[in-house]
Image 1 (cartoon, rainbow, N blue to C red):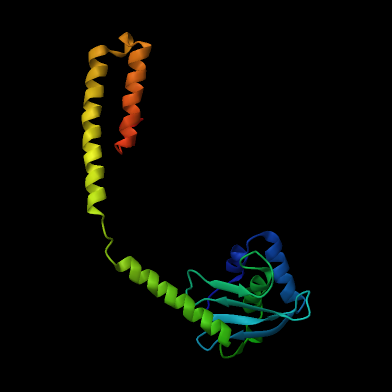
Image 2 (image 1 turned 90 degrees about the vertical axis):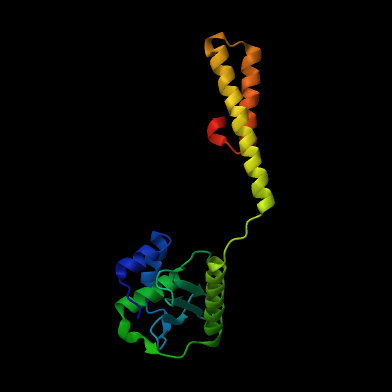
Amino acid sequence: MISIDEGYVESSAPNADAMKNGRGLVVKGKFLALHIDAAETLLFGQCQGSGKTPYQCSSDFARPDQPTHRCSCPSRQFPCKHCIGLMFAYVLKKASFTTADVPGDLAEKREKLATRTEAKKEEASKPKTVNKTALAKKIQAQLDGMDLLEKLTLDLTRIGIGNMNAKTAREIEEKARQLGNAYLPGAQA
């Protein structure tokens, strides 16, 4: 069941013009066909645009937290004014929507999206493999860096910052840079 209101549609618009133009399509009666699927998760229809053939637009709420908007128009905005208009039509003129079968191309796209989503879930559930050799190298570099940090701290306390000359300052800066290579950015700073 699609549960959207005007506020939702307005917040979905990429900008104020798309929102205004989308609402204008409904007011001007530019939608030639308005449909909803039997499961009430997909809005689809045809909207007369500037071209000869009407645009095929849809708003898929199979994933309510991430609706998918599709349109055959050349707009680069997502959702485009036609999809915004489709949602406004649903909110303002719900009775105008007729129950219809999902068109084949939309069914195919929904299936691909579901397959990708399932693959992502499956990938996320797999334990991550750790390159033990690389991890051992990193740990050894950090241990070496800790030794260097200890020497650097002892040198600084032995010499004292007030007694430091330009040559000593350069040596300390060089050692501090090496701490970055040892994966110790906090100590380096």
